[in-house]
Each structure stands twice: as C-alpha cells, then as structure tokens.
Image 1 (tube, helix red, strand yellow):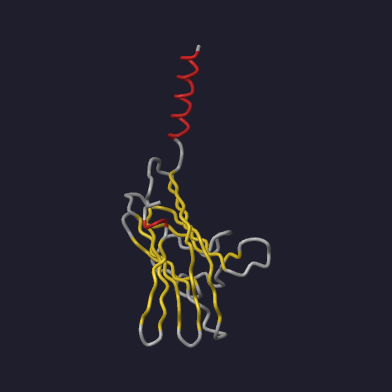
Image 2 (tube, helix red, strand yellow):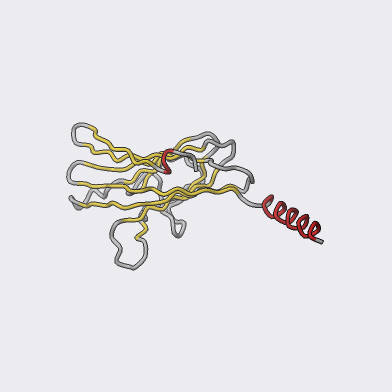
Length: 173
C-alpha cells in the first residue's frame, strides 16, 4: 500500500509540474529621477537569455505613499516614446495601461531592451525615487533564469555621471 501511495504521489507531482508555466521575479532596490534644469534619470536594461519570447512586467513604486499602499508610478501617455516612462518603439505588446504595472511588453529571444524613467520637466525641482520589481513569464515549461537586468542612474549637466543599480546581484532570475 505504501508503494502505491508513493507511486501515486510521484505521478501526481510529475504531471502537475509538467503543466506549469515558467516565471521569475527580481526587485529593483532603488531608482532616482530629478529635474532642475539639468536631468537625472534611470535606465533599466533587461536581457532575455533564453530561446523563447518572454512576457515582462515592470512595476516602479514612488517614495510618496499617502494611500497606505505602494505608490505605483504610471504614465499619462500610452506611447513608449513619450511621457516619464519610455522604451524603444519596437517592443512587441508594449503597454503602460496594465493594472498594477508601470509597463508590460514581450521581449523576444536573445534580445535586450531598456525601460527609462525620466523626471517631468516641469515644474523644476521635481524629485522621484523609490523601488520596483521586474517579473517575467512564458507558457513554455522548464525555463529558469531567463532574464538578466541592470540599472543605472545618470546625471546630465554638460558631462555624464552615472551610478550602477545592481538587480538580483547581477544573476539571472
């Protein structure tokens, strides 16, 4: 009887795992964006190192929290090339309207893209900082560690200065 239960559990566990999607998540420890006549902005580079297209969701949370919940940064623009959240225009399925996320898109196999957080240019002195997360998924089973990500904050004032933002210790997630 114990053998029968063991075989049943083994088969049930195997079949339930065989239908599982692949997914992962990493947290962005901080970002910084400021405008005072010069510009400080943050870029997050995201690379798909798998042989499958990956659905990616990025959520950026601002430092001001008056609602008792995370302050999701959302863009008033639905375009990837305007507003405070930007990305290359050619990203498949790009959206800034998915509830709970700042941006979502599909990242093709073996490609790299970026998400850029710009400060509003008016009024001067606007500061935004906070943290975030990057999540990915694909219906293809058995994929792990599909993405790598790295960020940097850049200060522009006649010269470029930048600092790194390490995401997931530089490891795939």
